[in-house]
Length: 85
Image (cartoon, rainbow, N blue to C red):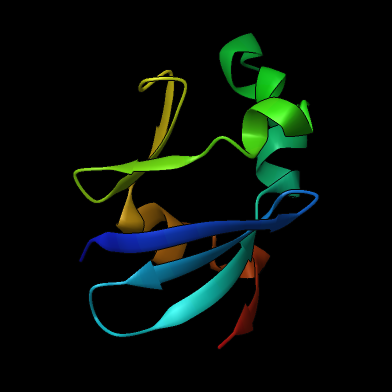
């Protein structure tokens, strides 16, 4: 599975379209606030977080400084997926 489209909504929420045809809204606030890594927690700065892009089916920020796979968004962070579209 790959991520085909991503759209920043607000706060730490992204609308994510997957190659399986599903589109979901994922909230990354818990992931970012609980991270002990400075390279991840710096994306609590919304001006940096909203610059999300897609690279080979992954969500990526700042030229790969932080990457999250489609599998992780769809399955591992499912408690943070707040709404299925």
